[in-house]
Length: 209
Image (cartoon, rainbow, N blue to C red; front, side):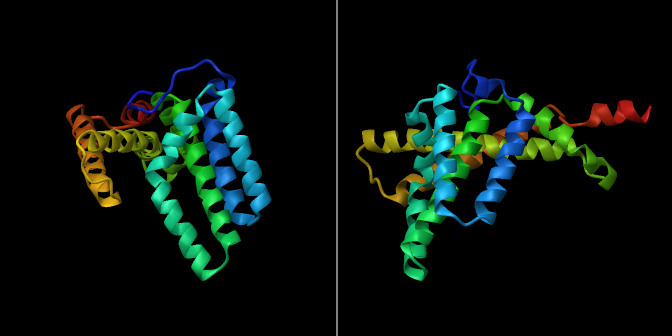
């Protein structure tokens, strides 16, 4: 898997329109939280796992997408268990796992350029509000792309800590991960600024002529 998160392939999941993938992500995320049913959430999770297999993406890769958020999921389950019931904890965790896996699947099977183009087309109406949809689509694409990148960085830090015999606590791993993510965000920002990249600028300019 590359740093961009895209895992090249020729499966039908890879060939699905980026726009349809994003719409499916939004619809599923909405339904999961509007309909509080464990059976439907588990069924959705099973379908997402099946999509990973159909996309020829290993379950190990899927697990790597969840691993950085594992302690957060455990904490959420404990809080729900103490405040409500264990079933509430299971429901919330299954919902979040489903969303994380599906969002990761979208980034793993979609090129960044294709995702940005699809988002920009779907957000064209923002022009009427005085908002550049190119910039919004770039931000959304980067946010989705950071999910598998976060998993990759966390795994690298974990292995480095293990090789050096250092502390394996959450804080010992979280701090260098956060530092690397902030450094990466700063590098991306600097690269965009250095290239004077303005999403949608040429399109706006040409349309005004």
